[in-house]
Length: 300
Ligand SMILES: [Fe+2]
Image (cartoon, rainbow, N blue to C red):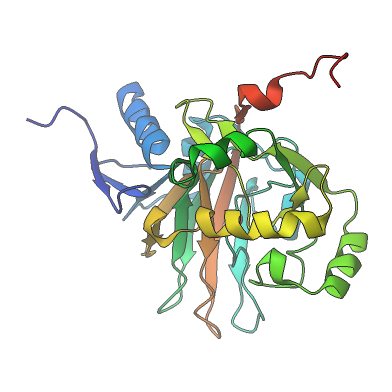
């Protein structure tokens, strides 16, 4: 006998689960809400298919999980008529690149990023446009105890500069000339986050590292930071820690920006893709004890 109201089908060992037997056009019962929340915490990214929901209903679903928050950095996207909190993520056929075509977690250059994103398919290309996810708890667990102990004392500075104009080029590989030009243009929009932090709901340790937004290790030069950052990028995006979601009409995804990276594949040039995104604010990652520890004033 089934003892939950929903059905959960994992897509891989570490992240991604499809949830069925739920109608998101209807208000969620407390029990169903809790089951979805548990699946979200366990898998970091959850997916629903065949949902016939309006932007208003997408917003209502998101509000069950926290306060809907559109911060200043989403101004590159327009809002849906009557529901400005629902942002339109659009890629026109003649656009040279898509939005989010690189491994990232949303808004990590913000001091307190939105913890969850809810994305609903509205118009899909005939092929391509899948989204990939990589679990950063699995990435943490793959590190040696020695490297973990070192990383627990470090933070990275996340900036926006690398993203605007360079498409999917991994940040550590861009030219120095380009780097300094973009860094000047977008100066001031940055935030520092501990590299290893604890998930506030599961207690799980997370490797909070963004291959595109991470600029340098706090207190280190960029040149000093690059070798370690290249290694962290490799671990964070290990293929075995990922899943790939193929969108279909009426599909909706919700992911945890504290636990997973995502990557919007740009493999449908010349086609149109329209998605609606809602972002939710809430409890953020907790620094682990080692970072939080204060150095005694008389320490050498
Ligand atoms: Fe994104």
